[in-house]
Length: 200
Image (cartoon, rainbow, N blue to C red; front, top):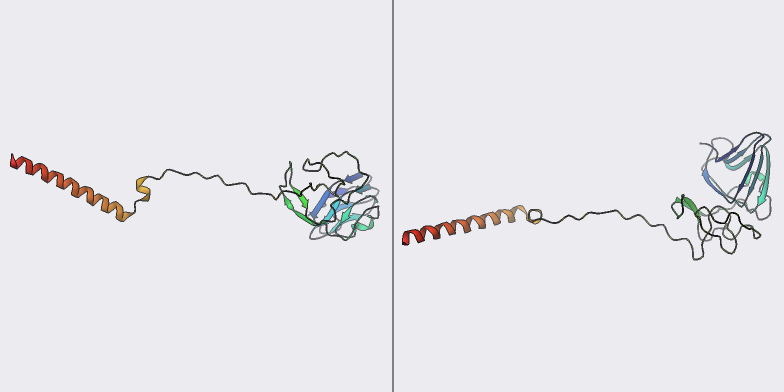
């Protein structure tokens, strides 16, 4: 298991309008591992911890740009305006919710809905699914649409219907009876021909 984002020494990384979920590590980190003299900034991002590790391990310089939502304490760095810690983001499973990639949808009642920066101005103009934002942006990479997100539907399985031939529906007994009737009819016609010859 590895981190979703590993910020090496002397590097700089900014994460915004993203969703980081279900990532695990056997030691420090899980979601984000920041070390040494690395500079790391994060804003408007959903962080949902995996089965082991934490959302953020910070051993470097880290700054919150605000309006983040973390299922744990966020490594102690999420102290910006609008940050929420130790809060369940209420995410759906990773699946096809429309758009070019799989996403974690925000379930009804998620604290990330309409909880983004109220002064947000594009870019980005669209969420991860190429959907426009509502009256106020949601936290993360998924923007709930007016009227909700359509329930994903399974793809119908193609079927082929073949024509039904006589031998497919006649059972063994009916096929035997049919042969017997045909044999008796043929024998009767043969006897009639013989009778006409004798009578002539």
